[in-house]
Image 1 (tube, helix red, strand yellow):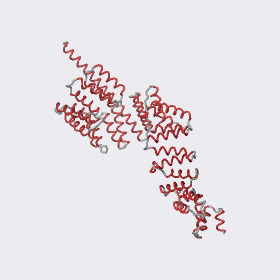
Image 2 (cartoon, helix red, strand yellow):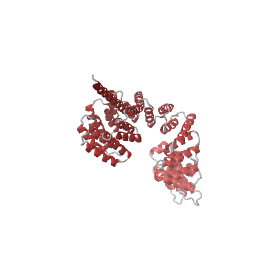
Image 3 (cartoon, one colour):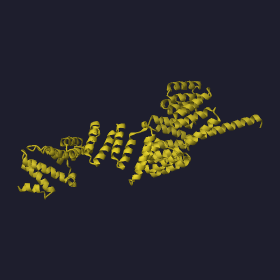
Image 4 (spheres, one colour):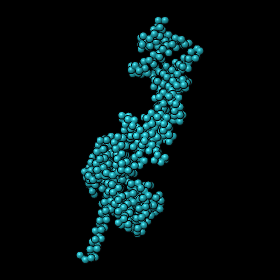
Length: 537
């Protein structure tokens, strides 16, 4: 072999080796081995800084993991390497598109398509990819260009997959068109795990556990090293509360991709499923590796609080310590209302009522959509301690600001707070009246309104019998089941005695009705001295 042929042969080997390395980097990205993929892309750029393709796909990598600024930098670099390179032109326009200048980017895409006479499938594919994945999506345009790609290259599996994704995004309720494209991709490569997972996700979207699970298992069998098949299967199991199976799938995923990023996703998945005791060891391991962010800190102190069935005070102290660390290190604008609520719950477990209430009020002030809920939490604290003045204060605030969110039980507790606290029977009567309006079938409403009116009537001369209508309403709303249960026995006796007295002593005397009421008392309590005295007299 002469020197010229040897040089060409060696150059060819180098090109193949480099292409294979780029293929490996892309494959690692596809398998979610992001840390290793990043290193591969960096090495490729160092070895050949003049490769448009290397820079372009490194930009795509950054876009995928959410580092948009780095992606734009790499796409600009790809566009500046060779101004005549078609992929470089697309890359420069893609940088503009992701920067927000979609108009100029669109104009440049049109110019590139004209130059290539709409016959370059790579150009059309990468433009479609931009429209499909950019911050501002144009799915219709992406679909048009992808159909052009397939027309020019009927064996382009990636184009079929992306077209399926685009069609699915356009019609969430109908996956038929998307499934057709995924099947077209499988006709090219029947064992492509990435495509099989796409079909599994469609079944998962319609909550068909069996078919989705079957497809995930099929993907795992087709390519045991395709990590996302295990992660997605784990997510499916979590969706259907199959936590043991989910953890098994996550463990398989971590064997293929045991990185801090992967473990972080695992912990986030467990946390989202409220598997707090399983979340804790994952977060603790991440911390040992120095992998921390605001989300790991949040998950840690939430989980420490939740994973404490025995009520161990030391665990709550630890949760408090971690929550304080969270609030010290996380920017204020990143704090959410439930962060304050969890801190409040920790203080509550440690018996620090004032601090508990303080945190709930901070949560309520931050999130008006949940403010009523937080006020309810505060009221529950005061109700437990029978702190009636504070309970009245909280319910007054909630009733004034969020009247539609006042529940029947809250009006019940509110009225009783006035009744037993400051003994403001006029206000108690008013609040119990609201309870009757809110929940007319609840017997406690008219009964307690009657009691409040009895107190208001004590100083009337002559007795005005203000509670008559309310006691009658109470007896009227009782069901046969209520009466048979015996729960309301003493209340029925109280109401019957009041009405019996009314028909005896009020100007509206009625012996028949009086006998009826006092007989009802004797039915429930044959030894009642007042009822016996009535009939003896």
